[in-house]
Length: 113
Length: 112
Image 1 (cartoon, chains in turn purple, red):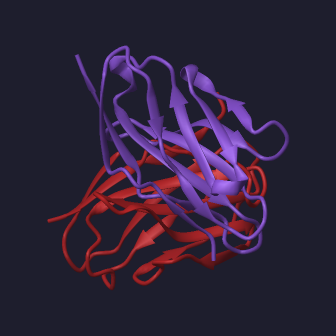
Image 2: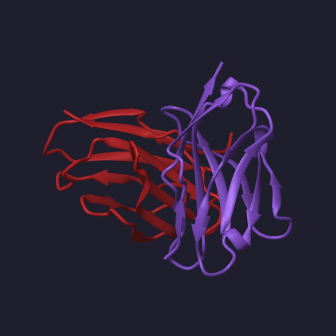
């Protein structure tokens, strides 16, 4: 069965600093990969997705992610964070078949002034 | 305005009562999902439906029931058999199975 691991439960970054959130997946073939963001008490918003092709994908709000097959990773990056980026971030994988979308447990991003 | 609408946003239930959470989408999506979110647990799949008139149990279906009589609607009933129903419930839909999902704003259910 497919699975997703987000190793960092919490990350604190200073405003203006760069950000990298880690995501590792387990799936036998090339999966579909997603990053979502959730503000408190809200639903999830899709930041970006990877289906195939270029391994560096651009998303909304200045985020990007890189698919690395050799490392089974799909890390999310942003060159300079803003206070409004403080939120919960979820990585998800869709491997096909009956498994559907599987989410990681999330990383809580805190922005320091 | 296309999207997914969940109602109500907040819901209170007495122990022993069934309660139904509404989820409607006007995106013409085939697939719909219900997730439960608890602090530190991420999202856990309750039920999903790949097409109208069909649905399947997810990882934590016990104590829940659903129906999919119309393409745009996928209501979730939390029954009295659910031992710990207090949680944040999220509904989602996707154009087809295994493509990106779009989420509603959630319903926070509290058992009092």
